[in-house]
Image 1: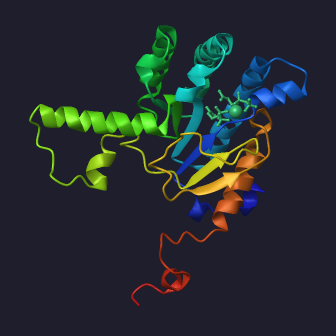
Image 2: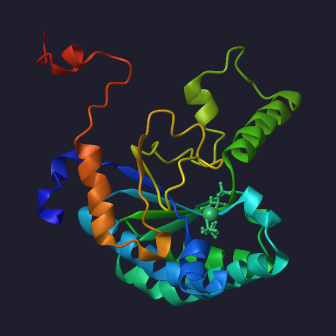
Length: 249
Ligand code: IPE
Ligand code: IPE
Ligand code: MG
């Protein structure tokens, strides 16, 4: 399948809502946390797969603002898993030239997680390959509100804020200020919703939904999503005829 992917028409940025760990575990008669642990292999696979293809940005929705409402034991287990995974994977990130960063309410994470993440981000800062972005304690509404609040604060502090705020101005206040919008958004586990993920940034993303549960997601599923993406005509409000007009017409 990989051979059929058009290298000239790859998204710069792929975002993934990694869903279905709990159901995957339940199907196996195991605890939900077993699903989360098994999900680490899928993260490895897509990271490697994206890096091999030369994708610039991969954003993984790992923990939402709303996920704090899960049972305390599950939240704790997820945070511990985050710490141990960052610890064990940093070597591989370095080897593969992957640069790690996060979006979301970093200060809401347990101190131990913050420390591990900071170390890994510092160590991988100079890497020039894939940018791996973990969305942690993230939600689209949270991000939009913190952008608005930051602008209001600056206005109060007499910073020059334009009369009419445009897209270019506003996007600088988003967590993703240095990241292009994802051209492709993938969600696993058959759920057809956005669950408060990148609300601003996915305005024109191509959406790909698959029934595959996240712990079963492998490189071939990434290729499948890319092949679907490459079959689509991205019109951005224009007509098909306009897009097919040759340059200069
Ligand atoms: C996704 O899997 C992982 C997180 C949201 C942290 P789930 O834990 O949501 O799995 P399901 O949806 O219950 O199967
Ligand atoms: C979305 O999955 C969040 C992450 C994948 C981190 P959820 O499983 O939390 O989403 P809902 O609650 O089913 O919409
Ligand atoms: Mg879920």
